[in-house]
Image (cartoon, rainbow, N blue to C red; front, side, top):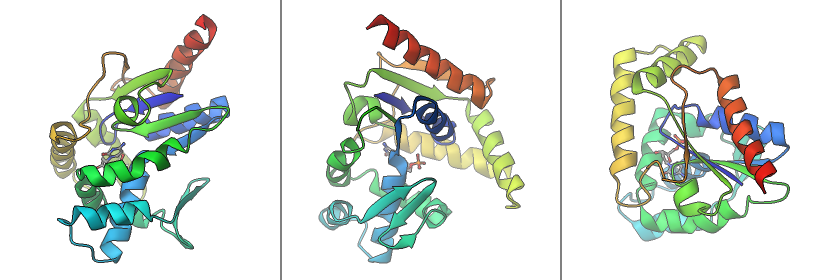
Length: 217
Ligand code: DC
């Protein structure tokens, strides 16, 4: 079990996915689950202050992942969960303890042989505290904003670096300062600062740590 936690736009999704693929393991994007809860709640017009109903949406979530796609029932929602509105809503529902509790068992069910690489904010602290390898993957806020900017421009989506910087700083503060499952580097997590690293270098580093662990057992 490899748990990779880190801030928004740090590249942990890309790295975790590549690590899972290299090892032939399963992959969990836990943020996608919070995004799916947010989308389902938006559609059902659930009141954001109604923690019990939000938790009900999380428990009853008819969600599925296929290679590269997310599904809500029979609908492919891969793009719908990545909109700005859904990102903002996901960040809200992620702050509700009842929603987090309702998603715990579902996240743990992804842990199947031969192994799981999971990424999010609380993989190593709450969901998989006994993970064999924990990584805190980060980069400076400027480097993350720059990467997001390039991604958006490549997709033909207009972007502004100052707005991206401001949004990332806001999300960092919200993720790190919330009372429930805040984003933290754990004492037993390896720090991977990818500011000056390529994706391939970051993946190689995680695989090397995993290799060291496997050979020391
Ligand atoms: O990683 P992401 O940006 O797709 O995550 C979406 C939201 O869910 C974000 O606001 C952080 C939150 N999240 C969380 O609280 N815990 C996780 N394990 C994963 C994501």
